Image (cartoon, rainbow, N blue to C red):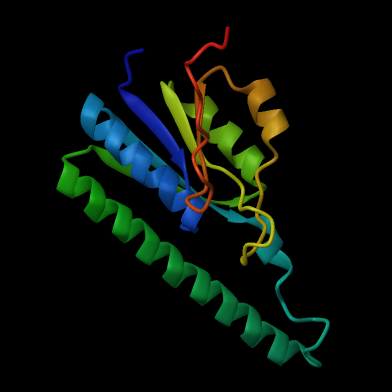
Length: 166
């Protein structure tokens, strides 16, 4: 398999960072370019505090605070990946989108001929954090590109045995 262009969908969580590390190593080894798709899940749209903030001015200020915080975190995250790709000599670009993760991934994948798409696996049950899960069924049903899903860093690797029993 000749890999020259990789699409990485990542949002900075530990599982996504494991996928980033794998994509960086893969691109560096293959001389491939990396396009990072950072998806801000659409559940943030409803984070206006309207269930506990009692007037429109307070709700608007809170909404602005949330938007600014997301913008700051997104900028830091993209800057980190930019530095990582520079260190490894990888041609890099990115897109930041807002929406349902699976829809955004499929839309990005349709815009360019990627050789491989890299994702992190969902968090293990009981792990803290927002559950912005990608609906994998429509993704695997629709994609015509290879898909590599990297295990969450807290999961033990699966041991496969090549030994046959008589």
